[in-house]
Length: 176
Image 1 (cartoon, rainbow, N blue to C red):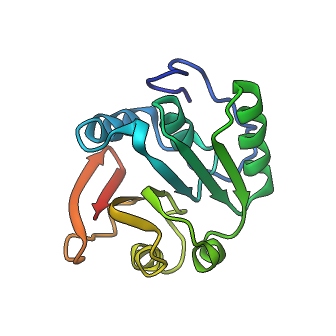
Image 2: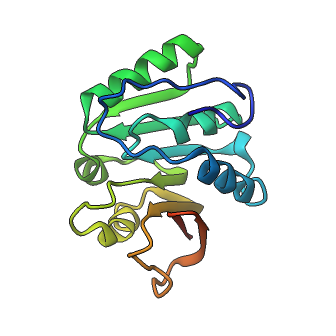
């Protein structure tokens, strides 16, 4: 797993093999960020990464100049890995938070320009997460939600859905 572009381009993330994660493939991540290059100014973004796992997506945002990134994951080993990587890269604008993402949504009062959510594909009621994020009012006025999911879930009928991008078995639904 590597960082595709930006300040830390080419740096490898080497998480412990026993982390309970399904990292976004480099192919899908590169495709996602190619789309984002045309949608956002990375240097103006405050980002929330929910179900962050290894933090691969969060590190990509940091590498591309995001103002601030908050990562949230319930697994202490994931958060420990992110903290160690933050320290080894000398990053000062990433905040790893160990929390159940649903609890975090209920208690966060911060606003973000972009929320990225990559829950486990087998999570019960996964299709409700976009609504929970909007109900928590976490996005700024022109904020963007990107939701990574399997192809068995479809969001095209959601009132805030704007586009779907597919990269192999990885699907990214975009919401405004």
